[in-house]
Image (cartoon, rainbow, N blue to C red; front, side):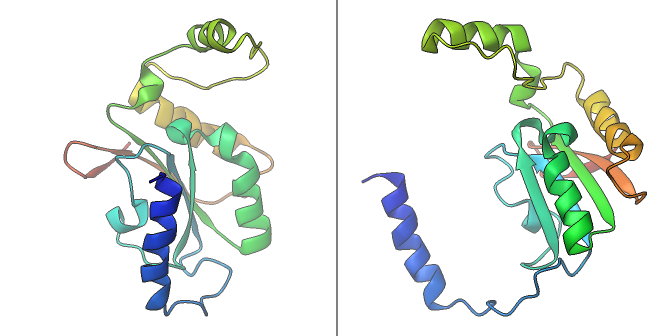
Length: 162
Protein backbone atom coordinates (compact mmCIF):
# COMPACT_ATOMS: atom_id res chain seq x y z
CA UNK A 1 0.00 0.00 0.00
CA UNK A 2 1.46 3.46 -0.87
CA UNK A 3 2.22 5.71 2.08
CA UNK A 4 -0.30 8.27 0.79
CA UNK A 5 -3.06 5.64 1.17
CA UNK A 6 -1.96 5.05 4.75
CA UNK A 7 -2.15 8.81 5.37
CA UNK A 8 -5.73 8.92 4.11
CA UNK A 9 -6.73 6.13 6.45
CA UNK A 10 -4.97 7.68 9.44
CA UNK A 11 -6.50 11.06 8.66
CA UNK A 12 -10.01 9.61 8.66
CA UNK A 13 -9.42 8.46 12.24
CA UNK A 14 -7.92 11.85 13.20
CA UNK A 15 -10.72 13.86 11.60
CA UNK A 16 -13.42 11.77 13.29
CA UNK A 17 -12.51 13.30 16.67
CA UNK A 18 -11.13 16.65 15.46
CA UNK A 19 -12.29 19.58 17.60
CA UNK A 20 -9.91 22.42 16.71
CA UNK A 21 -11.56 23.77 13.55
CA UNK A 22 -12.27 27.17 15.09
CA UNK A 23 -8.68 28.26 15.78
CA UNK A 24 -7.76 31.78 14.66
CA UNK A 25 -5.56 32.24 11.62
CA UNK A 26 -2.81 34.29 13.35
CA UNK A 27 -0.68 32.22 15.71
CA UNK A 28 -1.71 32.75 19.33
CA UNK A 29 1.87 33.01 20.65
CA UNK A 30 2.93 35.38 17.80
CA UNK A 31 6.06 33.34 17.07
CA UNK A 32 7.48 31.81 13.91
CA UNK A 33 9.69 28.77 14.37
CA UNK A 34 12.13 27.87 11.61
CA UNK A 35 13.56 24.38 11.72
CA UNK A 36 14.85 21.58 9.54
CA UNK A 37 12.66 19.15 7.61
CA UNK A 38 14.57 16.23 9.17
CA UNK A 39 12.23 13.35 10.00
CA UNK A 40 13.79 12.95 13.45
CA UNK A 41 12.17 16.27 14.39
CA UNK A 42 8.77 14.81 13.59
CA UNK A 43 6.81 17.21 15.79
CA UNK A 44 8.66 20.45 16.64
CA UNK A 45 5.53 21.83 18.29
CA UNK A 46 5.42 18.91 20.74
CA UNK A 47 9.15 19.25 21.46
CA UNK A 48 8.56 22.91 22.39
CA UNK A 49 5.33 22.48 24.34
CA UNK A 50 3.09 24.05 21.69
CA UNK A 51 -0.43 23.21 20.61
CA UNK A 52 -2.25 23.74 17.34
CA UNK A 53 -2.69 27.43 16.72
CA UNK A 54 0.23 28.57 18.89
CA UNK A 55 2.95 29.20 16.30
CA UNK A 56 3.96 29.07 12.68
CA UNK A 57 6.36 26.20 12.07
CA UNK A 58 8.41 26.74 8.92
CA UNK A 59 10.53 23.84 7.71
CA UNK A 60 13.14 23.39 5.03
CA UNK A 61 16.39 21.50 4.50
CA UNK A 62 18.68 22.68 7.28
CA UNK A 63 16.20 25.19 8.70
CA UNK A 64 17.94 27.89 6.61
CA UNK A 65 16.73 31.46 7.01
CA UNK A 66 17.39 32.67 3.47
CA UNK A 67 15.28 29.80 2.12
CA UNK A 68 12.46 30.67 4.54
CA UNK A 69 12.48 34.45 4.04
CA UNK A 70 9.26 34.47 2.01
CA UNK A 71 7.39 32.58 4.72
CA UNK A 72 8.82 34.74 7.52
CA UNK A 73 7.75 37.94 5.75
CA UNK A 74 4.21 36.60 5.28
CA UNK A 75 4.15 35.41 8.90
CA UNK A 76 5.10 38.86 10.17
CA UNK A 77 3.37 41.18 7.73
CA UNK A 78 0.08 39.36 7.29
CA UNK A 79 -0.27 37.21 10.39
CA UNK A 80 1.32 39.24 13.18
CA UNK A 81 4.23 37.17 14.42
CA UNK A 82 6.63 39.20 16.53
CA UNK A 83 9.34 36.70 17.43
CA UNK A 84 11.44 34.22 15.47
CA UNK A 85 13.07 31.05 16.77
CA UNK A 86 15.61 29.22 14.62
CA UNK A 87 16.34 25.58 15.40
CA UNK A 88 19.05 23.60 13.63
CA UNK A 89 19.99 20.12 14.88
CA UNK A 90 22.79 17.71 15.54
CA UNK A 91 23.72 15.10 12.94
CA UNK A 92 22.13 17.18 10.17
CA UNK A 93 22.44 15.98 6.59
CA UNK A 94 23.36 19.55 5.57
CA UNK A 95 26.75 18.92 7.21
CA UNK A 96 27.53 16.09 4.80
CA UNK A 97 27.85 17.68 1.35
CA UNK A 98 28.79 20.79 -0.60
CA UNK A 99 26.89 22.63 -3.32
CA UNK A 100 29.43 21.42 -5.88
CA UNK A 101 29.01 17.77 -4.81
CA UNK A 102 25.24 17.88 -5.06
CA UNK A 103 25.28 19.76 -8.36
CA UNK A 104 27.65 17.14 -9.77
CA UNK A 105 25.38 14.33 -8.56
CA UNK A 106 22.39 15.98 -10.23
CA UNK A 107 24.33 16.32 -13.50
CA UNK A 108 25.34 12.64 -13.33
CA UNK A 109 22.01 11.16 -12.22
CA UNK A 110 19.53 13.48 -13.92
CA UNK A 111 21.54 15.03 -16.74
CA UNK A 112 20.41 18.44 -15.52
CA UNK A 113 22.16 21.65 -14.47
CA UNK A 114 21.43 22.88 -10.94
CA UNK A 115 24.18 25.52 -10.85
CA UNK A 116 21.58 28.22 -10.22
CA UNK A 117 20.45 26.64 -6.94
CA UNK A 118 22.14 27.38 -3.62
CA UNK A 119 21.52 24.28 -1.50
CA UNK A 120 22.86 26.06 1.62
CA UNK A 121 24.90 23.29 3.27
CA UNK A 122 27.13 24.15 6.21
CA UNK A 123 30.22 22.75 7.91
CA UNK A 124 29.74 24.17 11.44
CA UNK A 125 26.41 23.57 13.16
CA UNK A 126 26.66 26.31 15.79
CA UNK A 127 27.91 28.82 13.24
CA UNK A 128 25.03 28.00 10.89
CA UNK A 129 22.58 29.01 13.62
CA UNK A 130 24.49 32.23 14.31
CA UNK A 131 24.63 32.99 10.57
CA UNK A 132 20.88 32.52 10.17
CA UNK A 133 20.09 34.65 13.23
CA UNK A 134 22.36 37.40 11.85
CA UNK A 135 20.80 37.10 8.37
CA UNK A 136 17.31 37.74 9.73
CA UNK A 137 18.42 40.54 12.07
CA UNK A 138 20.16 42.31 9.15
CA UNK A 139 17.36 41.84 6.63
CA UNK A 140 15.43 45.00 5.86
CA UNK A 141 12.47 42.78 4.99
CA UNK A 142 12.22 41.36 8.52
CA UNK A 143 10.81 43.33 11.43
CA UNK A 144 13.09 44.21 14.33
CA UNK A 145 11.92 41.43 16.64
CA UNK A 146 13.67 38.96 18.95
CA UNK A 147 15.44 36.25 16.93
CA UNK A 148 16.77 33.36 19.01
CA UNK A 149 18.79 30.37 17.85
CA UNK A 150 18.89 26.85 19.21
CA UNK A 151 20.39 23.49 18.40
CA UNK A 152 18.07 20.53 18.83
CA UNK A 153 19.91 17.42 19.97
CA UNK A 154 18.41 14.51 18.03
CA UNK A 155 20.09 12.15 20.49
CA UNK A 156 18.35 13.55 23.59
CA UNK A 157 15.41 15.67 22.37
CA UNK A 158 16.83 18.75 24.14
CA UNK A 159 17.19 22.23 22.67
CA UNK A 160 20.31 24.20 23.54
CA UNK A 161 20.41 27.97 23.07
CA UNK A 162 23.21 29.22 20.84
